[in-house]
Length: 439
Image 1 (cartoon, helix red, strand yellow):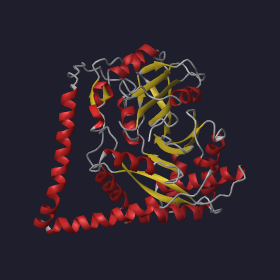
Image 2 (cartoon, helix red, strand yellow):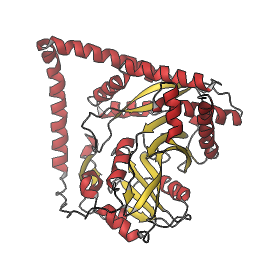
Image 3 (tube, rainbow, N blue to C red):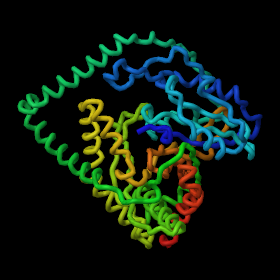
Image 4 (cartoon, rainbow, N blue to C red):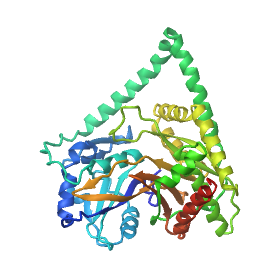
């Protein structure tokens, strides 16, 4: 899925207001604070190690050469958008831990800017937000730093990497071979498997339906732009409550209306587009768990519908049908099953699933923190999500919240969609259309 033009990192751009009663922290203080929190997220001091002969995917090992200076960097620009665009337009160094955090310790408006990114193989959107909250505190006064006892483990040698990969493959093969016997012994498990198969078939049916041709699936460049739209969360909630929908339904309807307006301004026919909608499949105890634990569903985004309430109802109906049919779990079953296939098959499926014919765009709702949060006394005021772009996907739409504010991040290829700021405005206009019907 990753290529010279498709950098598969998730991320965010945030602005924090300095404390009113004392000076804002400098870059060095912020970097030291971040370094002092890494004991809460061990993955952020690990790197990928290639397995010899390519017999397995790369594995995580402690980075014995880890240096915080390689990952927390000072931005020279005082404009948050410029910092975000520059950071997101370059790939991560695969020889190091796969994350970076850029700090603008004095934005043009006097606030502090943070732009974070981490590779999608390391975290999903929810985990990226959770890592950001690990750096923040519910009080302006941070607790005293805990002693850092981290000591990297010795890196495994080539023979150990190959042996562990072979052992893991044998373990999976044995588990697959035992499955028929376990089903015979447990009829209840067989019934459960049949139900899982039905859900997986439903998910596959919607997954394999081709996406229509669209200007949003043009070839992309390495350059990125993060367009931004901020609204009070109350505006989303009033639409949600009036039509007994979910926040996610309102986000999808606003995205559909925004894309419709955007296409019309480009003199393109606003047709239904196939949207991939990520869904978290973490268990109830998955909070704080770093890693990629998302499934997905596909829906037709009703960009052809001129009436805002009808758009919302179509989205609500489609998402309800997908969830009622167990499609997020079914899609996860398909993903889990692919792990048993040879690596060449896994890679081929991954590329096909991320192609421009598989879906037109991603629309992702990432739940954010509800309480006020601070970093060294600086209050988090804005945070815009970054949802990665695969090849031939020129736009993604992310949504998150903090406190009582809501934020859309329209992440776009800078060359094929130079007018993505207009799309962000159009999404806000689409939300206003919905609010106007509440009465």
